[in-house]
Amino acid sequence: MTSTKTALVLLLFVATATVAATAQTQVFVPGNASGYFGNPVDLRAPMVPAITVSGPGTITVTYVSGTVNYGVPGVEVGPNGGPYPANGGQYPLQEAKGIAPHKKIEQMAALIGAFVPQARVDHSGFKAIDATKDAARVGIMPGWLFFIGESKSFAVKKAGTLFLGINDTGVADNSGGFNVEVTGP
Image: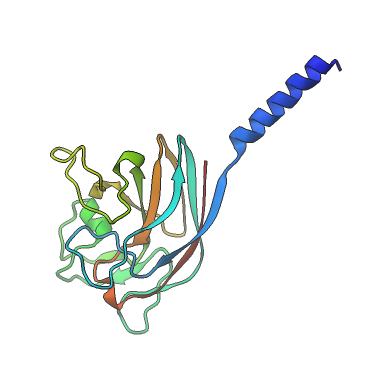
């Protein structure tokens, strides 16, 4: 093989390896990391920044270990959450989907996420924003929240940060948390 062909093959190999490289990190999501959009409550932690990506690609979140108690004595749930009877509350995922309160919640304390485009990331905390009125503000729109549970892979089209939290609003009595592995471009 000529030196030119060898250099070309080597260049293609390096370029392919660079494109295929992924970031991988372990993240702890405490049981009081709420995705709730409302007035601040004592002992509520913001959602946890899990990974920041600079462009398009696929992000995968995989549950590793841990449970959350969401204030019901003796009840520990995994990342898929658990049932909670009808009450006066509204929870992040249900609020994001526009579901009225007072319905039984099946994903109470489930692992949830929000991918926030880089221009809207506000590390001082989350603020619900209305895209029709506040398009230029930093913050997060409720519709950006999604269920992760035990594992989820999803494509992102632009730079931004994935935040992780718990599907609960009254987190002051929560304990535990989830260890997860996050990979991305």
